[in-house]
Amino acid sequence: MKPTKNDFSLELAAYLSEKDFVYGPEPELYGGIAGFYTYGPLGKRLKNNIETVIRKAFNVNGFFEIEYPLIAPAAVWKASGHLANFSDPTIECSKCNSSFRADKLVEEATGTSDAGHLTDEQLVNQIREHDLKCLNCKGRFNLEIKRYSLMLKTTIGSDIEAYNRPETATTTYLPFKHYLNFFRNRLPFTVFQIGKAFRNEISPRQHLLRMREFTQAESQFFIAPESKHTWEKFSKIENETLPFWTEDAQKKGQPLQIIKLKDALAKKILKNKAYAWNLWLSYHIFTEMGIPVQKIRLRQHYSDERAFYSDDTWDLEVELNAFGWTELAGISDRTDYDLKQHAKHSNQKLVARSPENVEFVPHVIEIAFGVDRPVFALCDLFYSKREQDEKRTILAFPPKMAPIQVAVFPLVKKDGLDDKAEQLYRSLENQFLCYFDDSGSIGKRYSRMDAVGTPYCITIDYDSMQHQDVTVRERDSMKQERVKLSELEKYLFQRLQK
Ligand code: GAP
Image 1 (cartoon, rainbow, N blue to C red):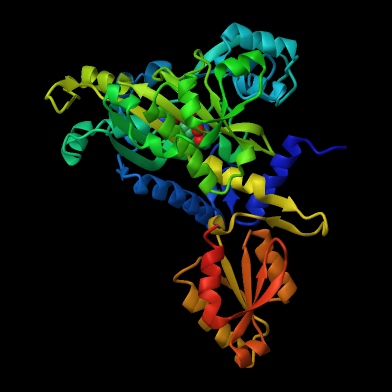
Image 2: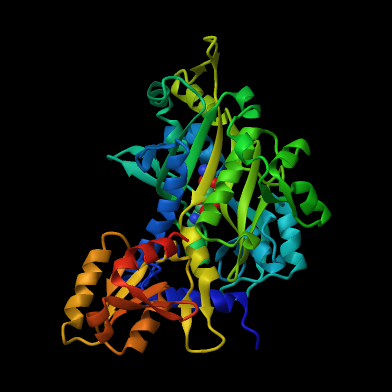
């Protein structure tokens, strides 16, 4: 029988646990609760490498990072609209009472990624039409959609109602007055956070894609409304092409279009230059992580699918082997919604001043990345069983993303080879993510490194002692070449940029 996507996702999850990337659900020792995972030693490095790509792209564009507390009182979430609006449509099994997200059931059954725009009635119709049954007991569903809040409640002290933040974004808006001071009242400016967010997902079943505690990396670009149309950095990227799948094309069943950013503006696919530039930056960050361009598309939200705060949203979707097209980031024009709401509810003035000293409320364009989904995407897309050798399973990560970039081995543990290998390892570990291994046959050591995605293995052998060179073996081609020790750092450095 042909393996299904579900078989693949289970196989991948088991592999990632066995190879020390992701353990869980946690607490595993006590049976585990869906939606909570531990990054093992290699998974944490992979996640750090992803955060490094995001942080670097943000930093080189003059974005500044802050860190806000994870918990905030109810007043904040009332103002942001999350308490009233942040909920998912769920449906309950009439037999075992298990609840599931109705839109996700429909997306899985239809192979689409846009059931978020369906009304409750349309969701029920789809569930009826596809004869969907309870995933736990195969019972029939009560054909009624219920709204289920995603907010994870807690208490501060003995009686202050509070919530774990469901996104970093809202908490980035709150110190707005301090930013004005820091940026000397000059807009546009961008502030970002990389940190935890919490959502009380009803029945998370998609490993790192749908967690109850996860990491977001979200930037907030504050700009005067009229400057959105004149954002100067746009001219540097206007001729670059992106894969746009507009709301209109989706409705008409048409494919996506790969077009230049300047044409997307001219055709009114995008509303303004500042938004277009943020969209480009998001796409650029994903290609920097090594996600192949043919696996990426930008899908515009239907107008009735957008979050309550958004005027325009495009999702950056990646086609995964395990789950098909999946949202990895969302780019939204949140206009002045958040600052106005927090000004109203806090009774404070949240405004900037134009050069002519006129007060205005800035607009905010948000890039909302999750960090966990890219971790999953890299594992999913680069997990491969090599056809030429069924037993060879590798994670063919782009070299710069690999959790171990260089492994150093002595051919044998004697005759000074071990000391020389250790010396080499010490000299490289300041520059690269390195690993030393002197146990088992060389073949076994290679396959252990292939299995976790290490692109280069270096062996010190008897010739190395005489000629001051080493064998470098490349993961994907399995080709070996001799490299002079004096050239090695440069050799690796060039290859590990990719
Ligand atoms: N501030 C806007 C916002 O939070 P979102 O589309 O709900 O927008 C942004 O979330 C990103 O956060 C998503 O694209 C995804 O990568 C990640 N994300 C959201 N919910 C998640 C979950 N339950 N588990 C893992 N990642 C999640």
